[in-house]
Length: 190
Image (tube, rainbow, N blue to C red):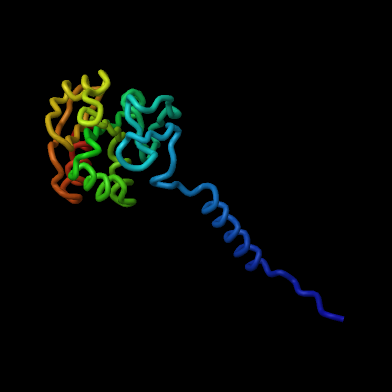
């Protein structure tokens, strides 16, 4: 006859903590570059989680004060979220053919650490210029480009819908400088 083994309280605690950790990993862990509530847009620069005001519709759930980071979204949704949270909006004016735009996307927006920092500082929106491909832009894109005096790509604009203040950076100054500019500008506009 084999002796019955008893489970110690320490073993129970270790098993419970392991099960909680696995559950967190499987279902509750945030994914910085995961999908959003917005439909994917083939014309948006970068990952399928990025949307433009023209090429993707719908709306995401309302933002709360405790929102840690914001996924790429549409212009209208970003303005709504900003009004609810006070978080500034960042517009990334870019074009498919623009080499510096693609470098900015890869080195900053698609980089896990830098991308999360951007999403913590601002509500990001990608505005894709289609003039070269289509001969013209849809009117909402053209209106935003006129409003923010976009003449070159990439152009980043960080603005506060509450105050109406906007700050613009033209060109790509490298990953560290661009990340510093986004976070400092966002902090100034809060």
